[in-house]
Length: 540
Image (cartoon, rainbow, N blue to C red; front, top):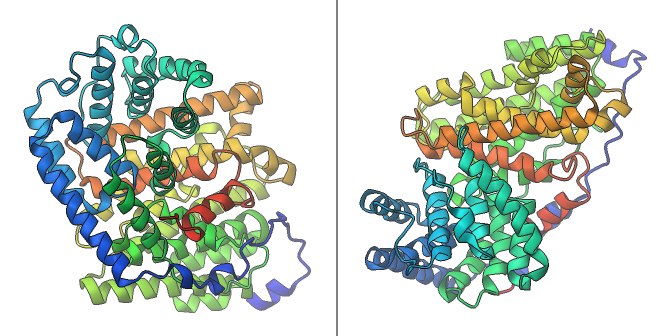
């Protein structure tokens, strides 16, 4: 029955996706010229020991020196190896410094504000909720100090709802930094332009580290130990990837395995997460294929069969599917089974994959609703659209998958909490859906796809496209504040390491979709990012 359905003369849509731009590059890539040797690895160990000594000594150093050291480690992409030492240092400062914004400034108002903003950002990044400057004195003391302005600008992106002073600080610093650009030295000008385009808090950590290494190298006040370690460590981590390929036999889909790898690299780049990184890369690649089945290729009857098969998740369900769907279902089952074997062997626990499958079922249900809307030409209200599209963004599913295989810290209670789409996950998914809609709605409408959030909002509220996009950007901004609030909540239910993947998923939307659909059309900036992170090493 299924085979006959697939072979009937069915008129199928095509989105005209361009093929993978990588071909066999990563399959044939042999990094023989950059293969690490014992001397290089030994040097990295020496440098890391030296940095640990710096962090120990920082307890007796001025506050300013300690904060700058921690900031440099984080921005250079080195903090993952010094998490304990950094947490201890910040905890000590938090518990002993009454006026955490002062100290070390030597009475210089500009320098004091710089230290306040730096301290504020570092603590909030670490999950501490420290209060902002309620007096708004930054305007009177900033003068023309671009360095302090930039630091305050970066800090303002960790604001939560109701922090009017930080809203004002963001507008003030953005305006004045832009006006000062032409008068700054080349190094500071480059930093300002980059931050105005991609604020540190919303950037992909590994990509930000790649950029900052070049900036730091040109800084006359740089720490030579940190710079050398950052370069060596970047090149060593660049070699973590291994050859992976899923033979989909699905030419209508977006062949974006390398781009999926980049996406998950933005969630986890640390070596200890290699297993979950591999798993999530395959999951997001297959979710992309399934998305294309529902959006572009499948008939209503076939989509009902596939939805039922995913709900049942039994081997017997495969026989009811058309051949192309069988390939996809089997690939998805193989990935789940492979991961289940690894978790059972290494951790002795069985519940992870249950949640992984339940999350995938939730995604497919949302895809099916949207496909029915398209096939029946139904125009949902904006609220109705958001209730489904938040799930179809894929991010609630990925938030669950991000806990699979990361160790005992991911308890059953943690999975239950994330599967129920708490506020931080919903906010992350809202960002994913709305940022995507802003960048893709025109192309999708030209292609004849289902209405996006932009079209739904325009029709319901009787506004122009520009006005609708403006309102949607405001919603994205609020969602970022909600994420910040959840991360800084001292009574949060999960430890910070379990919430950071959700933050990083939000960041990747800003990276991939910041200048258009960088996933579907990956020939431009996305290609450049992949080359800088996965192909070209840094000259040491």
